[in-house]
Length: 480
Image (tube, rainbow, N blue to C red; front, top):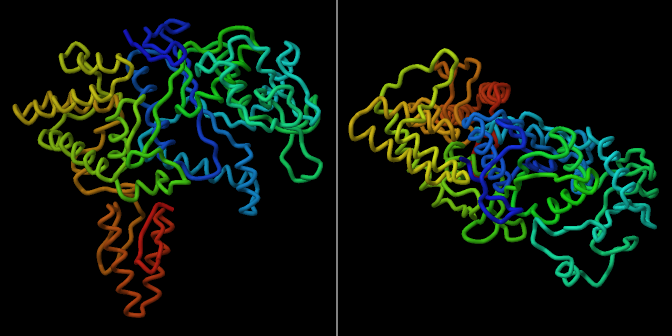
């Protein structure tokens, strides 16, 4: 039986879905005002792994991962850029999808944007007000009355006394209690261009915490199975979600709370202030996306993940060992339905399943893959190679033909382009090496003052999705 470490219970528990054979899971997604960073990569990959394993275990899964597309940071960044909030969020939603796709992350069943669910948020706030848990403050905001909800702090383990002891001296004006948090932010008359909606409390916009409560209950019901996110969301975001949802609906909100560990860089927590902050696409310029996914899954999802080039290099070597085993064998074509069936009665598969059923223990599951690779190399077993590929597929790994992996694909991987002929050579499917050859052809054309040819190469690459960037250090490329 699957066991999940439940943050709420602080223990591993047998997983028993509310409805037999059905799982409803909500994961807090991205606030889209910038490119996704390594912390986002971990959330994306970890809960993609959970989603895949639940489905491989036979559950009918409904997976919701939200997008926060209205927020103080979004408003500020749009103003700084001189663009509309919609243009900003649309651009970074597309970038997020590019990053997730590169990492082999399956799209969730629902990906709601907060701005699409304001009516549901207003309805929930009204319920809280009716239940005596929300009040309109003197400054026009609608706040949640934390002390009126029994059990506040049960997820994070923080008592009200501890929270009061940690209060700052200056109390936010308008709140009845410093612990109260905002449900609805009133619009300021001085900010004519502020994004706002009509509400029973005047024009304004929702607070951050109410978004997930409203979207989760609307798409999955008032009571559902799993809620996940990064460890940094445990308090106050998830704690406040519980207070809002249970306060509004007067029933249990979520049965199992899952939180993945922090990403650290050279043993320090990743942060912009320390200058050790990396976006996904910065990392993918140096490392193959599957190597990054493998690196994330080699660590248990609840442990801290220490990022460094040395650890990524080690992950690349390890993944190469697995692909070497696959390269040595000819694996039969996929079945007609395009999916191999896992033979769970087979000993390696049983060990793999036991590891995954133990709170998604991917390090142990990957150890089984290496044992299978050793079996392939030792006995030249095509059957073991096929089992290696199918079990790797459960984790979203080892699904490329081995030859593609050994072509040295890095960054965004191979790019299929319309046919381009340069110096008599026709290029269609591009590896990074082929793109580098074209860059050299363009440099040669510029030196020969054949600027028309240089511009043609750049233009055709751009139209096909590859952008060249010139700098004093040379020319680099990225996916446009």
